[in-house]
Length: 481
Image (cartoon, rainbow, N blue to C red):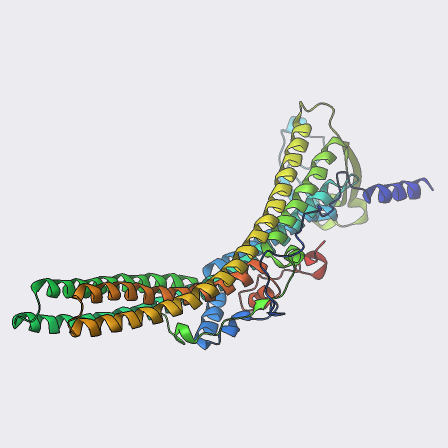
């Protein structure tokens, strides 16, 4: 009965683990966002970028998820974390192995028993087993921490996917805005070139002064300079997008003009949804769980460690007799070790673990607060940029009328060319700004989806390279606490 009682006692103790169990901290979640939209839809779990209705953009996002280097690195990081998890939890199970050796030696004749073989041979073959009984939960706490690190790495991969999709969409929008600005600048340059040509002819025949010609030339050169700047921005943006696509720098295909893009709807959701929808929040929580588990792992060092080892095999001076019953060898050993005085070695590790847990907690709370700010900023930008776009359209229309009337008055001799020049100086940058505002409004919706997260990340992640599954991505390992 005593052996059974000992086994039962060990089983009960093995179910205990020192250190604090994790409980999700209470966080101050606002009831609603500062900026609300009446028209929202449940689109957070779909491939929302398809709402732009540009097949070229859709394909660029698919290509980026397939070939982007950061996504591949994130998948490899998950595999690395899984390897660490497998290694850390392995001591929970008995360790089995084998050992064998063969030797032949000759001793001095004076040391050899008469009649004994000299030289002689010896052969040994053993199966070995060892197991550390995790009475205080040190290994289980370390395993809990490694598991949390694995889950945090998986969330980091989802975060890379989130950032990649948003970056491709915003970069493409900016590229199409630069394309539109280039069209405006080229058209303006051609108009200025025609005006310069006419004024040069009029100056030749004494109709206008040289000042008017130089003013027209200054307008023309301004447009030429702006074209060069926009063309450089296009090249730079194409190269950025190429890297996001996992390609060498090069040209990017174009789809619809920016004014033909459909503005996606705002996704529905409450502030409390961010706790489960944003990868950075989930990653921060897993880091907190891991840090919390390390406190228990450190505390367990105060308690004795119990290990069982065993050996079974054979030893013989003749290889043919190695596995016969008379050559049988076996032993088993129980070992207990524990600290008496460590000079603060263990208490220092406990203090370090507690401090890491505090830092992880503050990081978790800060990540949540930053997430709320991100969503508010994105919702505010969506609202204000829509108002700005409407005003910009009216401004451009008004400046076009102003420029047309100024030119009519100049041709009729009612005003100087300075009036025309001033009107053009207002219209040209306003048209460029309008194109950029269109892109900014589209990007504001992208930022809303980026800041709110959601199931669409999993939809996108399915298109990306998957970590090699070594059996550690089972539901039991991957499930959220």
